[in-house]
Length: 459
Image 1 (cartoon, rainbow, N blue to C red):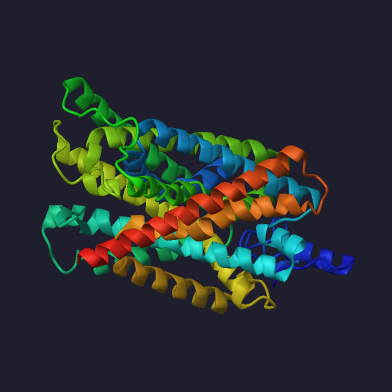
Image 2: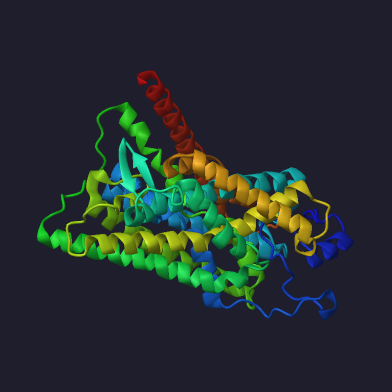
């Protein structure tokens, strides 16, 4: 059940029949009736766009307004666009190499180019990244439904606001109910295309959030009740410059979708559509990111929290403020719930491939499928209760695993050029991405460590 190294024709043929890592469909695209499955004729363009967009627009959108607050509007929006362009370039590198080598997964590509340790490095990175992202999803749901405390100020959750503080609507109970009643059924699907309708709904819910936030900000702007946001960062020393780099991992994490690109590509009826699908998804998601970041920062200014949803618990200064507060928070909490299984899909396959590389396909072993699913849900649930802030989780995963998956690994693949397709432009871009990724994220990690150390000294 591991990724084949392709050392012989026989192994390559076997690998094509059953390739199993973090990005392949859990079920074959087309299988014989004797295997007990029905034929699947391919995913549609729109379904693929929704699935990829759902992979991208997850919890990262909630931390982007805080990044804009740190960077300023103009540098912040430019960074969103630049990271989107680099993401398209890195995905294009992966797709071109995979199509040239007739490879159907990210992990298999890393195994072909760098051997077994390349595959293991990719799988481990996806596990770290996706566990971190799913923990963030749980934290957001807890913040929205049960409330959160930031800088000594308690922001009430929806259930607490409606019914008061009780044991049944406390964070642990609410998250447990969400895991059992919402996540457990959704993560039980064995093909990514089965989630196309929930993906479409999740994108629609994200748009609802953006439209309402923009509408409120525009109304308050016309009323003259919002302060002029800063266009550029305020720099008052070397430490303030280092702190700017802590926004980079958040921006990187917001665009990581590479682990599901091959899954979507494999399920397409026409695989030449993958490039326009990627481009369409990135344009859609970048538009959502820019609109959300700009209008949320305009609305809340320097009071913008790490998780901007927590800001929607107070009077917004417009009629029916409490109603809009609840609509925004409920819509995005529902969005996050529907994104969860898309990210979980890749996580489960990676972990299974890492722990059981020689076992049969996980979709044909219900016991192993159930054990891994339950174990992952349990770990994510417990971590979401213990980790207080989505900013902390984003900074760690964004500065480590996410940057490897999104930029360093694709650049290394194109630089190795095992399939002889890399141009001079490709190699220059690959070196540039590696240098930028290593330098910016190293500074971000250093800045985070110094901030933690300074906080401990003050305490």
